[in-house]
Image 1 (cartoon, helix red, strand yellow):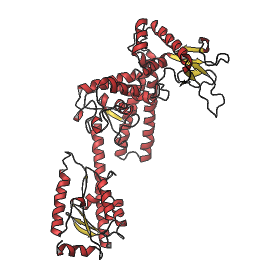
Image 2 (cartoon, rainbow, N blue to C red):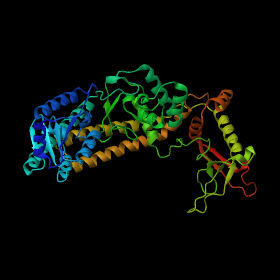
Image 3 (cartoon, rainbow, N blue to C red):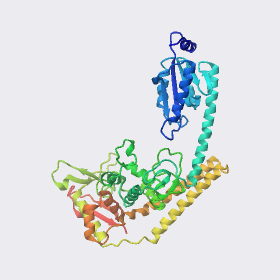
Image 4 (cartoon, rainbow, N blue to C red):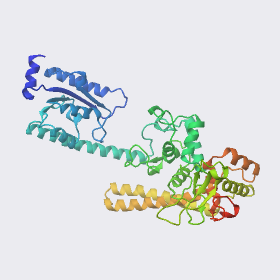
Length: 499
C-alpha cells in the first residue's frame, strides 16, 4: 500500500485502526434490467477512489438496483453495508448523497453509528463531508431535507399523473393475464378468463376453478415464471375475476399496492382496451364474493354441509366420517356440532347416503317438470336499479375527487361524502348478489330427466350441485328422532323449495 493511501487513512481513522473504504450504488428504476445506471455509478465511484488513492475490492462494493429509497422498499445491500460499518472506521463512496439516503430517518441511523464507528462520506457529485463533525452533520441534514422535499413533490406529481391517466381510461402497468403490454388482448388467455367467469357465475367455487385450471386446462398460472411451478391457486383466480380490467374498465386505488384487494379496486370508468367479460358481470362477480350469505365456499367439499339444518337448534349440519364403522350407511353422516356455550347444540346426526339420495331425487324431479322462467320484471328491475345506483355513486366519487382537488371541499367533507357513496355501491352490490343466485340454473337441461340424471351423476362437480341446491331450496331441515339415532328415515326430513 502506498504512503499516500496510509496518509489519507490516518486523517480519519484513530491510531491502530485501518479505515475501510466502501462503495454504495443504487438506482431507483431499471426499466431495461441491464443495470446500466448502477454500472455508470460504479465507474464514476471507482474513478473517484483512484483520484483519492483509495483501494477498493469487489466485496467492498454494495449495490441495490431498481430500489427506491423513498418508497420504503427494503435495500438488502444497504443493510449489509451498515453491518460492515459497525466493524470499524469507514469511508463511504457514493455517486451522490441521495443514492445513500433520501429520508431524514436513514441519515439519523447513520449518525447514530458515528460515536463508535467514525464515518466519512465521499460523493462524486457534491464533494465530501464528515459525519463525525457538527459541520458535516449540518450539511448532511440540509441535503437530506432537500432530497426528502424533492421526493415528496415527485411522488405527488406521479400520483396526480396516474390519477389523470386512470380518468382517461388508459392502460397502466405491466402485462396481466389475458392482456399483453398496453392492454393488447391475448386471445388464448382471454378464452380461459371467459371460462373462469362463466364457471364462477354458474356457482363453482374459486378452489374448484383452480383445480380445473391445474388438471384440465393445460394453462400455466400468470406467475409460472416466478418460481411457482405454474400452479394455480384460488387467490390467483379471485384476483383475476375481481379485476376491473377484464371487463374493459379502469380502476384506481393507490392505497392498494401490488394487489386488487378482496373485492377489487375502485372502478373509475371505461378503459381503452377490449373487454373479455361485461361490466355487469364484473359487478355481479364482486357482489357474489362480497355477499355474506354466499353458501358455496372453498370448504364446500360435501353436498349438503351447512345447506341442511338441525331441526332442534337451526344450526347448519356438517359432514363427518367414522372410518371404524364398516357399514356404508353409518360411515358418512351429517351432524349438528356441539358447542359448550350453547347446550341446545349437538346430539343430532343422520346418515349421509340416504339424505343425499332423497335430496338429489327431489332436485332432479323438480328440474324435470320445470321450465326455467324468464327473468321477471321485478328481477330485471332490481338489476337495472342496482346498476343505476352503482353508476351514480361512481359519478359522485369522481365529482368529489375533483372538488376536493380544487379546494371546494374540506378533507372531512370529502371523507364523509366518499364513505356515503361507497356504502351506496356496497348496498347495490348486495342486491345484485341476491339476484345472481339464479345464475346456477342457466344452461341446465331442464325438462330432460335422462340428461339431468347423467349430468348429476357424472358431469357436475360438488360446487356446481351445491349452487343448484342453493338456487332451488328454501329450507332443508333434519328433525331429531329419539328412536332411530343416526339412521335415515324420510319422515325426518322437511324439504321446501323456493317459489
